[in-house]
Length: 634
Image 1 (cartoon, rainbow, N blue to C red):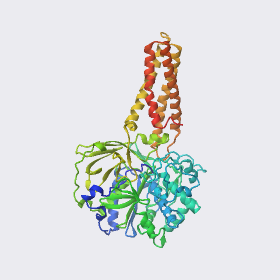
Image 2: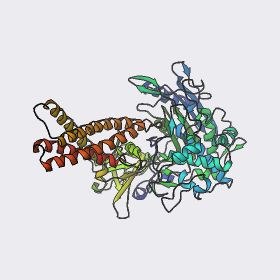
Image 3: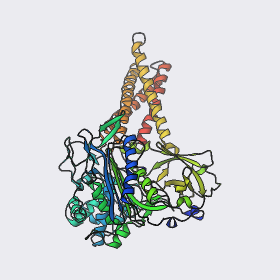
Image 4: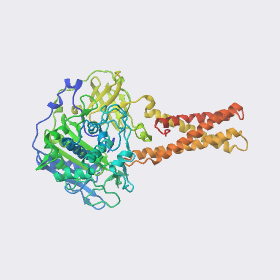
């Protein structure tokens, strides 16, 4: 669902700014609609999906394609249950669509907007039974929520569970107890927020005075005939036969992925079939209408497709719930999602009347649902970006752009900060005069085409764009990439970089190891040397603190792995580590004071006190790093 996370979807930047002078504008690149035969689509997708199942260790998948007002093709591939030998069926096998769920939530919001029950520009507090703090002068509105510009920090704990579900954990209670901090003024940047979407769903629940899932079933699923689509969640060992299992690729084979229950369910709990999702795509492509059913007025459906916010000029951004995608110059609208082995993507092309939904029950090793969508569009509805005017490379110095950046989908206020503190993007200089951007394992090369604007060096005909933005002093502040329209990367000072944090932690751990070595030496020599009482107490305190440092380091690692295990991260290891670290800090400070006292009163040899003192002082950077991660705050 996340940050995440939820990551790397096939969006490419709209040409703009300096680039627009050298390339055909995006609106001129759209090729005319082309009739697609069902047999052609089936043959092509059979090849793509068979390759994916054979080479990517994917257990099963489901696909639906709509063209010009009708379901062109749908099919299941592989298995929905490997152990039972049950095949995936497009009409009846439900897949967890994760954050694609959000499109139903935003459709429900827009239904209430057009009925006059909600105002996109009103303070959301007027609809809630709890208060979102007024951290900034500007209040948060539904327009901010739908564009992911509310400025909430990312929050993981309490999002979902693999344990027995708490019966008392209603949507409203989960949102009240899990309210994240506001870390940016509303409207400043797009930062993908699961909480913000769920909050919008709760606002619908409040104004219609019925549970959100019941409302969506009555007002979207039922009118469209989506009889196999539900918010109902099933956990435990026994799953209904029409619900696909999910898998992970582990040690050269497939292993069952755990099943999770999402408390803030408007953000990602829907299960659906490919055929049902085809009906939803058709309704949006036909301005809210499907057959005799209408879920939105035509003007409202059109409004949902209009751009609403972007993280840099001339770059893909958010529409009203959808995000923009550019495949070879053609503007499309999409939403993707990932959860517990499932990965899904819905993508529509309003200019051709095309829609494609694809979902896999295993995370592919290389090929992704985005690549399936890109392959289909290039085969049957190619844009003309490859025929656009050649890119004119600009000769510009790139030193100002180099450095470390952090995604704005981050947590800054709690111990969850460890989940983003070590997740940095790096911009370095490339050999061809451009820049290299490294985001985890994703490394891309870019060439300058104008001030603060780059295009991708590989496959540049796609017009992928990288755009840097500046603060009011003219300094580089952030960058955004077209195929990640839901996140910006903000520059971080050297003291907040992962390298600095790792260095501080390493120095502290080395100091702890020296203390343990000193304690061992003192134990072995205890009959030959009798250190003073003050030094003995100091050594004991320092030794206990060193053990606590090592223990808290191990708990940090466990907690960090938990945070990467979305969306069921557990705070337990981090909370324990926090108190262990606080105990270690108290002990080490007391030990240092005793060492100073011993040296001052000359109760022991200078050498023994000096070694212990230096080692104890060397642990302090460890605590400095923990403080930067919010671990020493109550």
